[in-house]
View 1 (cartoon, rainbow, N blue to C red):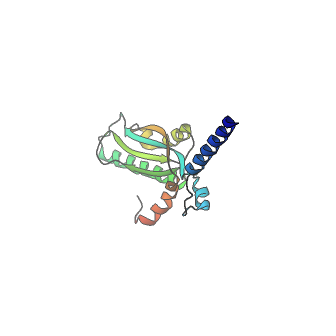
View 2 (cartoon, helix red, strand yellow; view 1 turned 135 degrees about the vertical axis):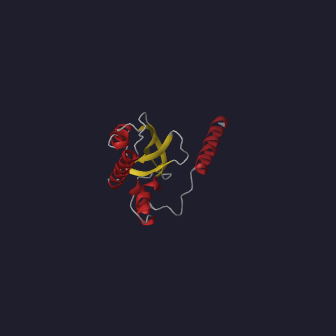
View 3 (tube, rainbow, N blue to C red; view 1 turned 60 degrees about the vertical axis):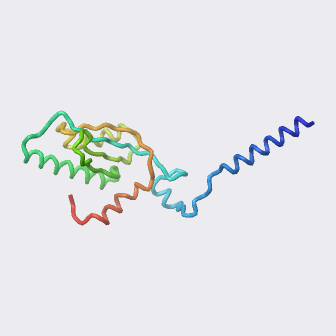
Length: 154
């Protein structure tokens, strides 16, 4: 009997401890926004991140480089307009990693297909390294916010 009582008390204490470990609900939580951006219960979601690295081809002609950069930027805009690209930008330290893309896709294959539309990838001045990435679902709102803060088109 004492053994049974001890087991019941132990189970009760364990259940109480587990209940106390349950996370508090955020008073600012917006269920509609969370659903819109695909957030999980802690406000995160899956993406694919691409590191754009220097490729084997080095263009020496400045006109060719400028034309390729223009086509690269147009492709970035297209992917963003399609809702597939959440953010993109160059690194400014002139290292071998030239920039990043953050894709709103579920698989590496989908991201690879998108990167293959980039003229700089096609010309091999850039190569991509793709990784699954788990980050804030709030980033899904970044493209709309960006439209409100940019004065000029690329």
